[in-house]
Length: 145
Ligand SMILES: [Fe+2]
Ligand SMILES: [Fe+2]
Image 1 (tube, rainbow, N blue to C red):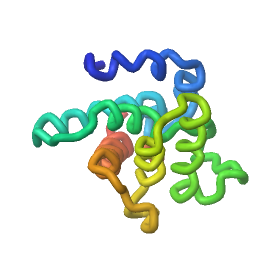
Image 2: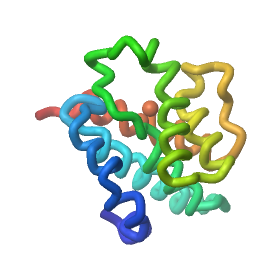
Image 3: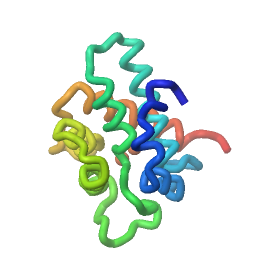
């Protein structure tokens, strides 16, 4: 894991965060791994393009963007249509457990754009999160073994 992410011990060592290991994101990747990969991918984009953004808020948003505790493949009834509902569930959980600020909350809420067409990213960090999440999700879905 890259050093910039390792610093986020409050999140990485949290039991609820670690429990994300138990749920599949895409293919063989669990949600904890996926969240870390999205953080990493976004940092690469930020560094490569030399973007002036708030990295701290980006990393928190990425680590917590799928902070929900169920297997969406098994579609529990209370969650509604996963693609449209989980961003709010994750944002609310992240707020409750880590007391994230409003910008991070908004980034998590909008990470499914453009699928969730009305929740448009309001910050650069939120937009990068949308892109990084899609790149990682595709890679994980089509990864061999
Ligand atoms: Fe998501
Ligand atoms: Fe995701």
